[in-house]
Length: 263
Ligand code: G3P
Ligand code: CA
Image (cartoon, rainbow, N blue to C red; front, side, top):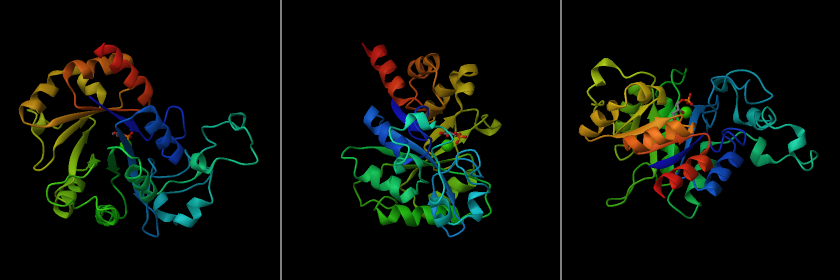
C-alpha cells in the first residue's frame, strides 16, 4: 500500500509549503498530494481553501490575487509559533512562502527516486476549464502530461468533479485520474467508475461503514485511494482491505505502522 503525504507532511509542517513536501520525502513518502488553484494572473498555486485567510496572513480568494501578491504573504506562521524558529529574524522561506505547482514539480522531478504526485483540481471555480488547460500546459513543460510511448507519468489528477476528470482525459489521456468521493454516488455503488477513471478516492468514513466497497472497485478492475487516513485503526483497515494507496497527514507514522504490520 502506497503512502501519499496529504498536503505534504502537513501534521508537522505548514500544509502546502515546500518544507512540508521536503519533509514528506525525507520521511519516505511514496507520493505527494496537493490541491491547485489558479491565481488571477493564471498561475497554479498549491492552496486548499478558496480563500487564503486560514493559511496565510492575507485575505481573500486566491482567484482574485496575483502570484506577486501571494509571494508577499506568510503561509507558515499560522501553524508555527515563533518559538519554533531558531532565528526569528530569518524566517525559513520554504516553510513560509506560497508554493507554485511548478516548484513542486521540480521537487518531484529532482527527487532522485520515483515519487507520484497526486494533484487535486478544486471546483467550482470562476476559471472552470482553464484550470485543467493550465495544468496540462504546466505538466507539459516537464514532459509529464504526454509521456513518450513506453513510459508513464508519475502524475495523477484527482477531483470531486467528474467534469474536471473528463476534461483531463480529453487533454492528457495518459494521466491517470482518481474520482474523490464524500459519499459514493448511487450509480457507482457497484464499484464502477466514470469512463477512463482508474481509481476511486473514498473518504475513510465510507470504508469504515462499507468495507466491501473496496472489493467491488477491485472487481471492476480499479484501484482505491483512501483519504485522509491518519488513525492507526484506519491504516490497519485499509491494509486489510488491500487498498492501493492511503493519503495521510502523517506519512512517517503510516510507514512505521505498515512496517509493523509486515513484520
Ligand atoms: O486526497 C483527497 C483529499 O485531499 C480531499 O479532501 O479537503 O483534503 O482536499 P481535501
Ligand atoms: Ca486535497
